[in-house]
Amino acid sequence: MIKSIKYSKKSLDEIADKKEQPNFCGASWADEDVDLIRKEIKDYYIKEQSHTCVYCKQVFKSSNGRTWDIEHIISREAVHEFMFEPENLCVSCPDCNQRKGAGKVTKSKARKKLPSTSSDYFIVHPHFDNYEHHIEAVKPGEFYFSKSSKGEFTISLCGLNRFYEFAGYDPAVAASDLILQYADLLSRTQDHDKRKYLLRQISALTLKELLVADESD
Image (tube, rainbow, N blue to C red; front, side):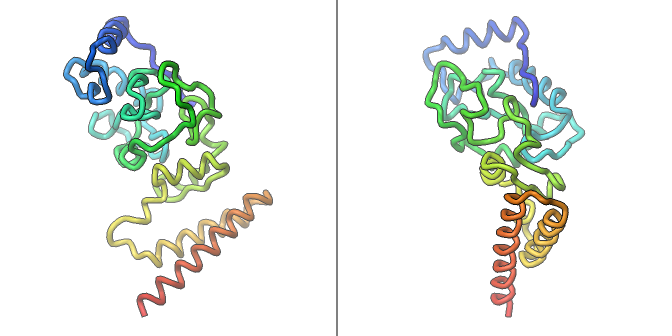
């Protein structure tokens, strides 16, 4: 879990003024008077997260702003009132940020107070959840295994297995590689539920591999 930003007094004052503006909305994030606040947020979370994306767990050893996106966990399009809430912020790689988009991540309908418990969220929340309890990043940037419904939802919403979708990657090779990864995990676990999940995945991928082979004949 990550620690939330503590804003400078100047930023706190500017945020308070911004939220009082009659036209304050999700698009206000792009206003010029938010530039320094955005920089403070990005600089803080890059360091706090040790240059690691909260979703795919890839490490990007760069502080260049173009390498990172500020991530609103509950999107500013959905609830702009949480735009500057420290526990609704982190940084992610652009790919995860784009895949997640404005997808629904909470069952809460709150608009005044940010939902602040793990059970309020469908996804693995970087401030309220231990990532390793829900997702095993077997090979960050290549292969992920869900340990819970939250993990499964996060993998799907953020497209964490998107790395097998790159142009030019043979689908049959991708399926075969995933089967090997799952088989390796299967050989190393005694957990009944985990074994059932892995067997289902292997069966589905085997069927996919056969279908791809049929199409190529």
